[in-house]
Amino acid sequence: MELSFPSELGYERVARDAVAAFARRLGFDQERIEDLKTALGEACINAIEHGNGRAPGLRVDISCVCEDGRLMVEILDQGLNRYQQRNVVASIDTKLSGLAPLRGMGLMMIAQLVDEAGFTESQDGRNHFRLALYRNQKTPVAQS
Amino acid sequence: MLEDELSVSTRERDGVAIIDLVGDVTTFAEEKINNAYAQVTSKGAKHVLMNFRQNDYINSAGIAILIGVVTEVNRNNQKLAISGLSQHFQKIFRMVGLAQYADIYQDEDEAIQGFATAAA
Image (cartoon, rainbow over all chains, first blue to last red; front, side, top):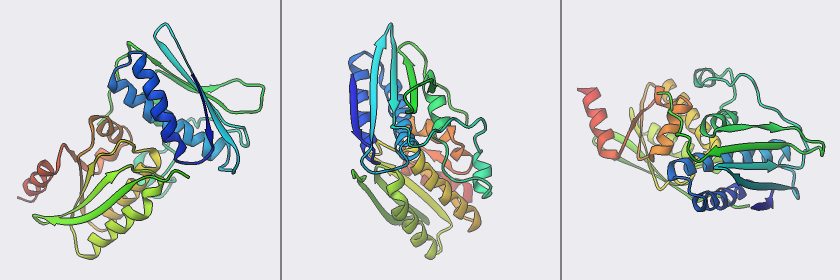
């Protein structure tokens, strides 16, 4: 399945709904679909805000493939900016003390919600971010 | 632009200022949430409950707004609780550390009871 939508905040909800419907058809359970929706929403926001720099007229493309119970979702922006995952994510304590921006949790959330997540190599100048969900994987346990 | 539908309102119950959030909590929610928090704080609220309903979509930008509220709650020596989240978003809130700064309850009644128990 392939999707293409305008690079504007709000359209990520459409992508979430479409990919969730696809995953439901493939037999993923509701809890895993909720994880996927949140992870995909964050990846789309990163594509819109960082990869495409919120520039008007650009697009975000998504492709979904399921093989052997592994749903792979690739999110492509148009590569206005190259961005990578930071190794250290600021804790909420750091944010509350004003030493880090309040935002910047998206990639951390994605990593904890899906079974695979990360940038893939590309030669086309675009950011390729891939996440994958396994049909039989248990949902992550959050730390309290 | 597909802006989110979020309704924010405030009320008081048993000495607790309740901020009801119905709908999606994303970057577009900032002004509504901050205004509601400022409103209850200006009325002297010490116990604040953020009561979520029908929240199909809460993203990291929305969570960042809530962390901003926690900053103000700490500064103003208030106590914050959260209720009404789905199991999925309870998990997310624990994941990002919000549960360290706000008690999370299943529903409004449980939260009100929690405030009463803490004050006793």
